[in-house]
Length: 182
Image (cartoon, rainbow, N blue to C red; front, side, top):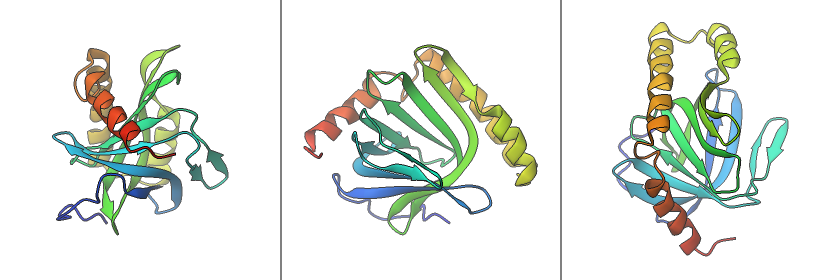
């Protein structure tokens, strides 16, 4: 699916669409975003208030900027929302996230690690995970890997380890702001 050997990334400031699908190939979220660049953690994208995020049956227009990291492993995607958003951190456990036809794409695997100001850090959507791992017949090794990864990511977010600390995404928020997009 993805081309992990992309020789060049787009220029920072390039507008893109981030395409999510479900395990069975059905469409899921599409997020309007901008490529910010990369660091040792992976590729970073930004989204500004009012940019489109939609999936079949639902449209969401963010009210606060966010930055998103896609690590080279392709098995999770980290989004940090700017204050005063109540959800500070949102990590989508995923599969095969990378580049497809010059844009980011991947499979949403239901489990999420969330840090909300009113609830703290927790693993979300376990009910959806349980339903879909049966309905979509997720392979056993994928289930084991992602369940263990969710617990590890939850621990890392609680500990404030980079890239889930404040400083790492702050630098990417600065870059997003410096692009002067609207």
